[in-house]
Image (cartoon, rainbow, N blue to C red; front, side, top):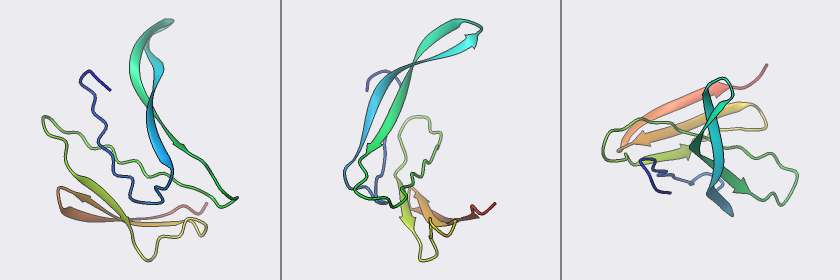
Length: 102
């Protein structure tokens, strides 16, 4: 990937046949002045009509990328609209729960 951007990822939840790839992209800090920037895309083929989900953890760090692991908990129910995960950063675990119902 090059440059100062690193992409440490853990694809532990529903990760079969998933890939991460770099794509060309840009950002404009001033009107009509695009600046190239790194961007990534997750790709995953669907074998059926079941919904898929991605969990993205953005975690700042200075020198060494932390080890981040995401695990589903028993109450995690995408179709029912409930997210129930454990996110561990360098082995320090936190539970994340959210209802996605309108």
